[in-house]
Length: 460
Image (cartoon, rainbow, N blue to C red; front, side):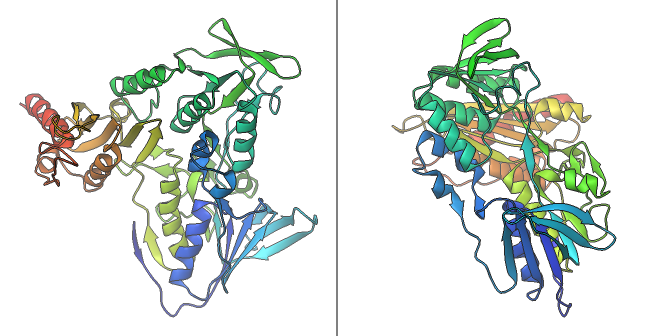
């Protein structure tokens, strides 16, 4: 992201719909540019914010209380919060938002000079027989502290659960339920876990680990139907009936863009359509986070990372622009890390299949070794893989899985991708070395050298 501030500009009224990561950081970015701006945050909840990525750890008990995940945004002279309020519609011509007080039922109109939509996303319900029928009667979603608490309370009374979905949050929750003493089955229609992020050979590491922890992994087998009486009693997966009184839906999310659609703002499959300044089709209206379509920092194609970090960077751009400054977003790499049991799983950029779908010919390099020298008593295994453009040598993606050191290495790869670095440049990086921390010939460089050898053979 690049940005330029504004000085001497008149103060303005900025309305932000949604108080999540995007809404919070957009308000901060805006008030840094225009200290006199009047910012109004609209939020349906009766509390300010929570940390959604912490929900699996609160379910497991690593975080003592779900209340610990909630935090308050300080009210300042020029930032006000309207909690328990819902934005109903946007009058883009009159530049005002229709807002309902959910406590009193009162409806009011808020005028704006700039509007930022940060409405997030909503979970997808798998369209199988019994799914809709048993919502609240054995079928759970995990989207906030309230329904996460309900899931934990149900799990403590449960014998068996089915986790539907193989994404990062779903697998973290599956492990949390197992550690609460629940028999857990994990099912998804496609074979590998995290298929948008990991190559199948890397996904096999996760599958083996989950099985070693006692989870029943049913990847490549979809749900036929969900059965029960008053509550869920069983789930049929690939023709096999599995007794279970708990089902967790974690098959993905869809952009919460209804208010934009209703107001005539352009939307697409990936959410509200925006440009590099996070501007929508309506004048002085911006959209950020999960509700907004975004593009790859590799090739500019549309991607759906659904990450807090993406919302953070969107917000930094939209907040500056909404306050009269100039900033541009340069795309998402989808960089993330998940902590599954004892495993760090980290990825950035494209995996091999995505890169090939986008028209790249790829070569890869992989290292399987210990993070530290093998003679160190606490040396632990790590697997690192790089995905490279076979024609230019440019790094397109990275994947790392291990009990330690995965995230820090993927952060290095993310910077390399951002700088459009080639393998030749990457292998010359000087990394810190100490036997208590790392190996002299780092796994990242081993993977890079393996990819470089293949690249040279392909180029030759």
